[in-house]
Length: 470
Ligand code: AMP
Ligand code: ZN
Image (cartoon, rainbow, N blue to C red; front, top):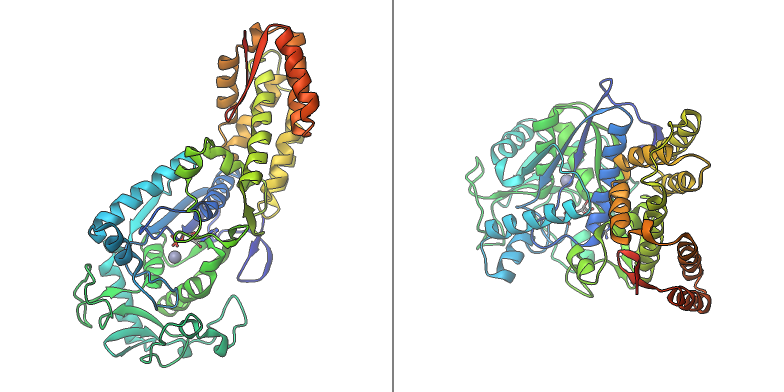
């Protein structure tokens, strides 16, 4: 497989360190609020990547953290504590907030058919590991104490900016955002490993440490949780593109300083989902969640399908119009599958199967090109092959796409009882669907009348077109 690697800034051949095994780490959610559908775009695409590794025969171990402490509103260690803000907003304790939104996150993932990683570890469960690694960084001279906090000293590294050629002066994150700069730091790029002299006096979660009572910085958690479960070598690390700097840059700095050698070979970053007005937000504009989409009648898997239609390395604009288009296309696919799902006569056409299978695999082998993989699915729908061959292929593709394709098609068959609807009526129904897809509403209306004249009522629902006897 060729995969774009942010570290080398090119597509690389993916070769895990140990034959047949992939160790994979994903930055998990900060559980101070619901995930927005932008966050979930990242998790959908990472899920596709994991499933494609498995599809390709790898034995995958995937680990994800849950950020329930240490993440401030600015990734540069300034601003407010996100968890504390969430707790104040809802007048609950930080741990109550963390539990509630962790559960909400996994409920959303379930609706989107996102598999739960093999290991899920909350940051608050690993305080001893953080202290062990920070102590070692202190001993090795990579960390220092200033103003009560422990900082990582980026000047001790040969190269700190591994992903980009940043300039120091561009790095005044705090200054740029109008937040006071931390005067304790020796170098602008230094970051906090352990807070003690926190500006958050009312910080609920604090632990004893060799440097005083306090709590960990955000970046250290991912390094430690990854190393705890996956050892000193990691094959691939994932996250949204905003994580590349400073979060992942800091993870690499502290992990490699700690273990004394290269840590992770491949860095996979998903680009952002934006709205027409710009950045996706939890606090301003419409807070776009899976539940909101459901309340408007959308099947969450339509959102997954919408994401799969574009490449993970391109930013994607969300609008209801775009989602509606995806819903129409998705329902057409299901309706098409429904026409041959029960046709299990004959044998699988091996030559046809291999050809179509390979075009699907080739698409994903080329930097996880999911939109081409969807094209490969369309090719199956229109292929000159029997139903058995098509259903076998679709079931195989769906191990990666996870759109419940055959299941939904079977349900549609049951609902529509299309078998009882005469072929000439079904033909008009198909024509009408086509007319609607082409936005030829005048033709669609006249076909509806014609169908009505034959004694059948046609209804458009979010789940697709339904036909019943008058
Ligand atoms: P957070 O809960 O803020 O720690 O973010 C969870 C994940 O969502 C991280 O991997 C982020 O990089 C990613 N993310 C944040 N915003 C977006 C967005 N608009 N589109 C895609 N991914 C995002
Ligand atoms: Zn992380």
